[in-house]
Amino acid sequence: MRFSIQLTRTTGRNLLPMDYQYYISAWIYKTIKLSNDEFARFLHDRGYGSDEGKLFKLFCFSRLEFGKPLLLPAEKLFQISAATLRLLISFDIPITASHFIEGIFKDQELYLGDKQHGLNLRVTTVELLPEPVFLETMRYRLLTPWVVSIKEDGKPQPVYLAADDERFSTMAARHLAEKHNLTHTETPAVRHEQIVVSRINGFKRSGFVISPGTPRETRVVGNLFEFTLTAPITIHQMAWNAGISEKSSMGFGMIETTKENNKQEN
Image 1 (spheres, rainbow, N blue to C red):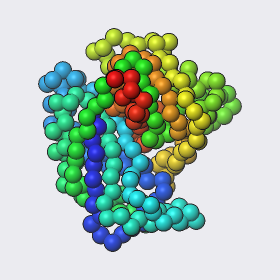
Image 2: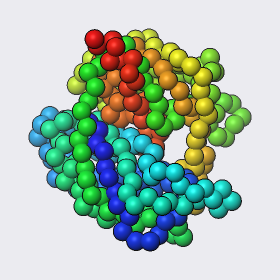
Image 3: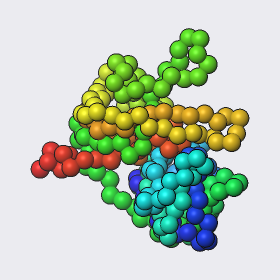
Image 4: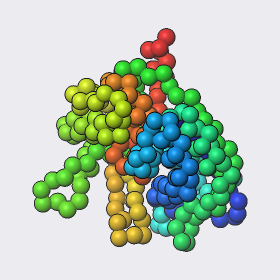
């Protein structure tokens, strides 16, 4: 299920690090963790299970929407004039848990940023958005980059594949099948051969730094493009709600449907 969250600036602070996704991810984790006991009990009672890994990892989020900021590239900062910001967050959990999500985020006050620069915000509205009607073949647009990585001998860091790499689609399908089978044990397992990803147009390389200012700091690079996905319906639902990419809970792999899907339904 997907939510549109409106945030209002509460102070005059208006500088935000360009690599802000880490701070959003940390806020979501913290919010869930603070309510974990009650939330996990609710999910368990309804047959979803109590695996903490499911609860904490099956979500994704969009970029922040804050109009057109002033870019300060030397400082790697956005100067934001907008009074309100918008964020999309999706969770791959039962729709019956929607009121819990609304409750734990509504009216929250938070600081988004590092020790020097950031925004003081308050959550003013939490709106549940309708889920698409999924077909076996759907057309999507990436809102945040799709990351597919591989380990290569002799290289300490992962190699992040470009979307035109011949290995991209196969590795992406393998990841989706594995993610589904590990987290959706109540539904039939999916083989990666059942998943076909077809890029429609060109692509743009895009990424950002995760865990900035920590020993784990690293830059992760993915791809933005439109594509068709042919797969069992449960794969579409998971990709929509939990993200289609590796590292979805860090700000990668959120998708949206395109107008072409409406034509298919009609």
